[in-house]
Image (cartoon, rainbow, N blue to C red; front, side, top):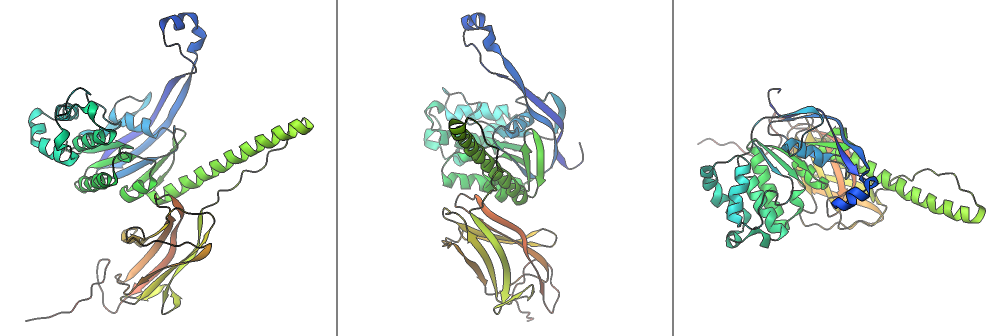
Length: 413
């Protein structure tokens, strides 16, 4: 492996036998041999990627594209037909809810079983037992058989074990979709903590908001191949554009079929297919700029009051919309980020209008920056996302290092 890498995946392929029909009993298998027809379905067609130590990546794509299969290959639940996978260090995984739990054993007993699967000795498990139980918040149920647990309780216990085995690599497949909002927030805080400690994390999720909040990189898998990888919000936006286009094509194909049936019933012949409709965003960001004293500008003195204006057009109703922005330094380091939902501000989107953010002091250290703006629905689904929509520079009479200018004064006593 290359120095600094935690995972290296080289040109892996994987296919499965998909039975079109299959007898369930011996009698059916003997009498109806024709039912055992199957086809070989290629799920992965030469996937290759690398993950650095301490990096968090998200695997995205439509159902059946191969992302969960990729994760299972990383856990060695299954093995590739061709290609190689190299991983450095202890691996912990959350692939299926309660996988490895015995339903008739208590929560405490299942902690020992599950943790031993991850490679911990009994002594190591004893040392972590209190932390696992405390994190799971299942103290009063820990002596009950896990078959009496709800799905949320299963998830709490499974997650609590997985994050307390001191893994070098953590693999997660949609597990955070289960549980109440408070526990999900607690899980993400813990993931950020172990990521800061250097753990490598790979997440499969349909929640692009989660991917963008947590991951350094997104990998979009499409029909068994990597279609795109890079900065999460860019890859996610392209993925949403593609999915919107496919939905439009399916709607158009369905309409075309209905028109053909209608025409055939009238004239006995079909019609030519039309062009698929383009995806219509629920909201379109028309533009944005910064203003100082009511005038648009891109050159701002440190400490000056600034107003950011975003101009939009609403095309469809949006469920509890929010506006978010990220400001990047010219080396792509995030200098600042915020969204209206976190500050409990309710956006009132008209058919067309302007959203404004007012800053009493524009306290970025002198340098070059760019701004990304987004409008999302409450569930973090993107309505529109514009990258580098504003670029600006800041200046100041004195030289400062870092990102933020702090008001200050010097004294000597």
